[in-house]
Structures are given as C-alpha cells and as structure tokens.
Image 1: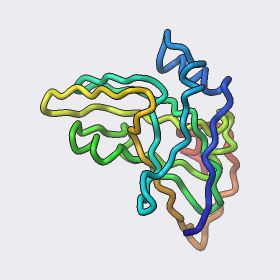
Image 2: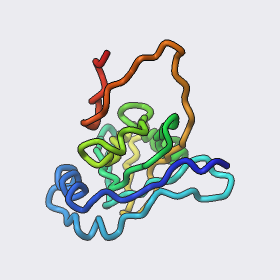
Image 3: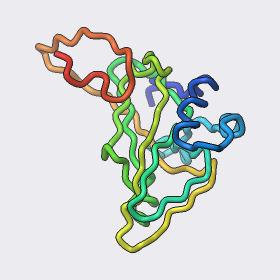
Image 4: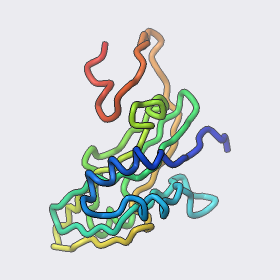
Length: 169
C-alpha cells in the first residue's frame, strides 16, 4: 500500500468556531480533548472511520453539520471521498447532504485549516431516530487517486473552504 496522507487535528481556535456554530451551548474544550483521528477498523478496510465530537440525536428528516476537528494532508493527485458508514446508511438511510464529500489535496491549506465538516441527514422512512454518542464512528473516508485531462489549465490557488472553487475558469 502506498502511504499518501496524514490526518491531523485542526487548531482549538478553528475547531471551537465550527463546534460552537453547530452545537451551541456545548463545551468545545471537552469535545476537542476527546477528538480521535480517523482510523481503519481492520487491515483490509478501505475506509477510515470518522468519529463524532459530541452526542447526536437525529429524528427522521433532521440534519446536522458536524465539525470533525480533522484535516487531511495528502499527496497531490489524490482526493479524500467521504461517505456515511455502511451500517448507518443501511439502518437509517443516513446520508451526506452532498451525497459524497470530496476533499481536495489543496483544501489542507484553506483559510479554515482544511477543517473537514460532514453534513448528515437521517432519511429514515421507517420513523427511526438515530442516536449516537461522542466518539462513535459515523462516516468513512477513502483516499483515491485522480487524473486530469491533457489540456487542463487550472492554475488558481485555494483560499476558502466549501464551494470556494466553483465558478473558476
């Protein structure tokens, strides 16, 4: 296996900003102290599990933006794709609001330190409420290589986070 990336925590300042927005009234210090870097469950796992920074309860149809407190430094030519954990998707129709998250290698250098947020929705059609505890795995990330066209001329640099590259020519 080729080793092409490293997970890191974002700074407490960056995490606190995102956490306070998404979990108002909860202590970001306690959540930051409990952050776990993504990891694979087995030697054969393709996905790295991402863990919740706080308890979450989502009724059917409810959604939540989760600040993971994590950033990913990866080699150029690679991207990190984010998905819900298979079991949660199967049991609760847990979905990422953008269907598949794509974290580009240059996102690591974004103004928000490359802080990875994951927005979820419980799309249960059986009326099932999803309850997960802080520290539980809820999403998974898979690193994949990508190619570019022979006539590609992209030369802009990233500054922002979500959607900051759209509309560039």
